[in-house]
Amino acid sequence: MSRQDIDRFSTGPSFVRVADQASLTLPLRPSVVADALDLRVLELLTARLCHELSGPIAAINNGVELLAEEPVAASGGLDRDFMQDAIALVGDSASRAASRLQFYRFAYGFGNTGLMVGSAPVELAARFFEGTRVACDYGDSIRTMPLDWQRLACNLLLTGAEALSRGGNLVLAAGPAGIKVEAIGEFAALSPETSAALALVTPVAALTSRSIQAYFTGLLAETLGRRLVRTEELRRVQLSAVALRD
Image 1 (tube, helix red, strand yellow):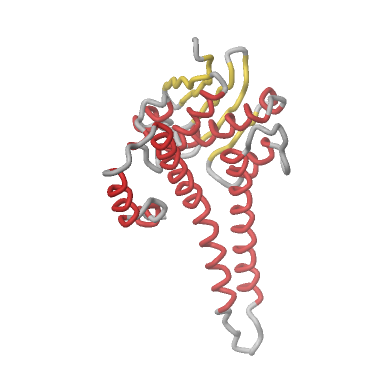
Image 2 (cartoon, rainbow, N blue to C red):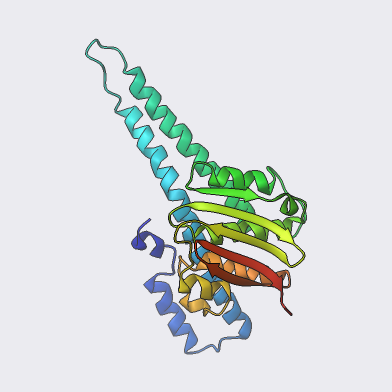
């Protein structure tokens, strides 16, 4: 998705003009400011989600177009190999889109009801990373944790995956100090922008579609009384959720 496509999810110039006019006559209440900050985070998460889904959905569209333009063989019959390839493309892309959507529904949308419909988080993570350059080890110690902690774990996986631009392994585990994920791979590293967002030191107005995942993960950790600590060494990045007082 291009920068222009992402910008479509932001408020347009006409909205900004109306808001500017209103600010001349009505003072902003603290709750209004907080709502505006929340809206900024929501916009960026929505843009990121659309970006993640745009690839497989575009591939589905390409497969459908191929089927619609299916050439007829010289004998007048259908090119069965061509049709099978196009159908396989549509099926694989639809499966990837569904896997991503289900994973993000849990990572971004799971509430505090304590109930979950559908596959377990470990299964969602396995399908999400299947067929990618990143292998995911969702540790047994995580699988028995409450769902709100597993939601944090899944967001840690997303943030850790950003450190593996050339692929590698994600190892998710829980111990006495809390949840941690290790990203292991060639040139494993997090950008300064992502690291700052992870620590919640980036102003909301300065967040981007690249840094929003780390910021959202930091917010989730804070709601659980945790802060995220990053340690890096050669070919390894570790993100740990430790108690706020530590």
